[in-house]
Length: 126
Image 1 (tube, rainbow, N blue to C red):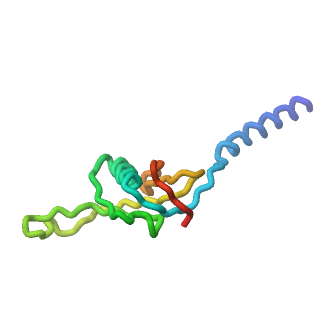
Image 2 (cartoon, rainbow, N blue to C red; image 1 turned 135 degrees about the vertical axis):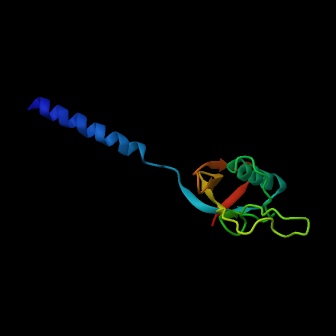
Image 3 (tube, rainbow, N blue to C red; image 1 turned 180 degrees about the horizontal axis):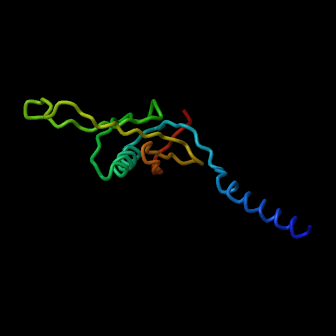
C-alpha cells in the first residue's frame, strides 16, 4: 500500500513538472512607438532586415506609431520606364507585431515567431 502511494506521488509530481514549464509570466500587450527618433527608427529597420535575412528595407518615419502591426511587401522590380518586369506577384507580405513586454519594446515576426528587442525605442500599450 505504501509503495502504491509513493508511486502515485511520484507520478503526480512528474505530471506537474511540464505544467510549470508552460507557465509564461511575461505580460505582453500590443504597443505603438511613442517619440520616434533616428535611433529608434534605425533599430526598427535593423530588426526587420534581420528578420528578413538581411534584406534591405524601406520604412516610413511613422512606422508603428499608429498601429501595432507592420506589413512589409516585397519590392516589385521595374524596368527603366517604371513598368513591372513581371506580371503577378505571388509573394506573401511579411507581418510583424510590436508588443510591450516587461518594459521592453519587442518586434515579433508573425511567420517565424522570432523576437527582436528594439533598443532606443519607447513604446506604449495600444
